[in-house]
Amino acid sequence: MVNHRKIALHYSHHSSWKSLPKEDRELLELAAKVARNAYAPYSKFRVGAALRMDDGSTVTGSNQENASFPAGTCAERTALHAAMTAKPKGAVESMAIVVPQVRGQKPVTPCGICRQALVEQERRQEGPIRLLMGITRGPVIEMFTVDALLPMSFDSGHLPGARRKKRS
Ligand code: THU
Image 1 (cartoon, rainbow, N blue to C red):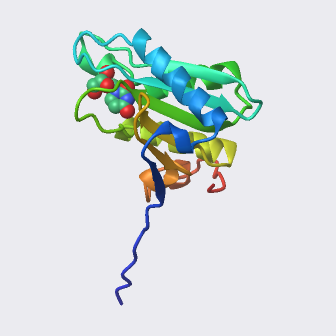
Image 2: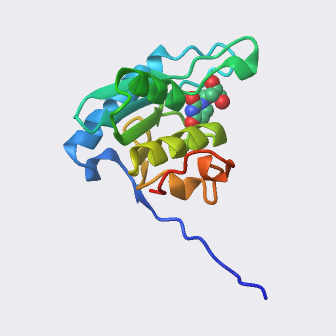
């Protein structure tokens, strides 16, 4: 017997920052600012990430490249790993990812490796991470969980003998 199944993707498209609450605009502003600290001599593509923890504190990250290209890290993982190093028991509520306003630029969504890292954090904290993916003072795509961006993902539940974590 065959069972056909569908997965729906829910997100909100904001044409500007104006339709978002002040807290979100501040997080986007922080991400836009920190994009200037990117080390991107190879791609010249600067990305900033800012996340808000459940205690209200914020942590930032930018992409850091390397002459050995795969050694570079994206803004999202730079921020996520800094946050979890500082507060291993903390939970990430929201993450803003911002790229500068240039002609034809679309909001960026996290790469596959960052989705994998963020989904594992959702499992770890047993709660969703909200994403705000925007252009400096331009459109923003809002998603309510990273899980939706990486359906049917590989996690510790697939590893024999690994401690099973409840799905968020
Ligand atoms: N990059 C990020 O930092 N975040 C993304 O969401 C997409 C890509 C970085 C990686 C690399 O330094 C540059 O952008 C070009 O891919």
